[in-house]
Length: 419
Image (cartoon, rainbow, N blue to C red; front, side, top):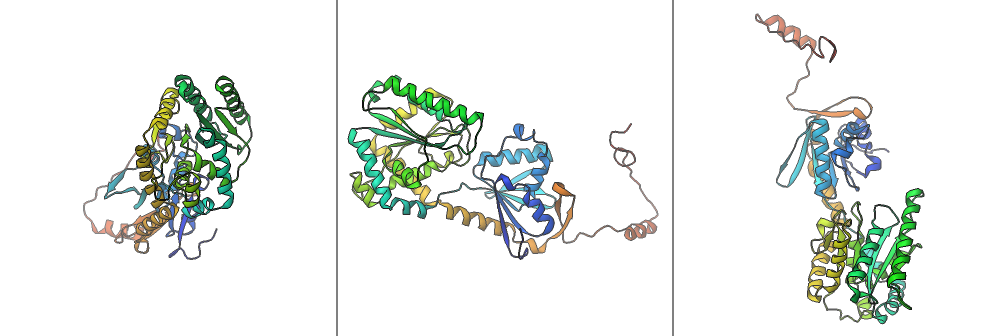
């Protein structure tokens, strides 16, 4: 990687794979304008402190000028680690947070990422999407079925099995929904292979078979599992038709599935006509989401659940199904307004504006690089700072008549802990 002009260029580093990169960039260009954004959850200090290079990674991130997180919880974990392991403190002024580190103020920004509105709206306009929506309407709506939708990776942290247990509990506690609701679970193929993946697949398949055997009847399966790869326009078509979207991950990053669902439910004139809606009629949607996903704080109208509590998830699903139409419309309008205005373009512009503000006084700094390897850091000095020289010490010593000489024992005259 080469920075063309470190005095003018801005460098933006993304995600945990490149957490060490700020150190190497800062070592080569002391005054580089550097931002870092973490797209994954930052662990709590109790978990993070188990890493063998915990301090080195923290110092690497602190070599950035601006560090971004999706939620305040992630930022709080990072600040706690800096406090406990490096002894650093942070302060918050006028909505900005900063850590004082080696004479520099490293800014902290909380900024949830958004979706690409133009890309999703172009997919909604595709004839293939319209054809798939017609197919799903015939399969579900024309059969008086209400579709609940889950879209997750086949991963141990996505909580698919917990979602299926909640569906089973719902049908058991509320028999009036039997024959009326269908949970369509789109399981994206696993990104890796291993024992965990096989166990998740086996558990999911077993739960689907059990539920369909218990509550199904000829022509009706309460759970439809789609574990084959789907094209994006096909997923969007499912979003359009689904009355409620369920996300029950036990641990996740931002997770933009709820955002995609909301924009798809807003639809367009052609899709709304297929759904029997007037173009000017209020749209509606419903979300049941885990409190452990990154987008949860941004969607205040969603029903938040602890996915480990099966009964509460089942109750939330029932509440979503029973909710009055005006309430669904009100919540959808609130969510759509937020998601459509806080898209990925807004996210990028906001981060870069703060990075530019943070680096405004770079040219005025006097910086010195110290340390080796991942311990390298830049010390920013006061403009009036003068480097201590041997000649200055000798000259001052000769001019004085009264002298006080202070010597530290442990670590100065003798190695630390040497007795």
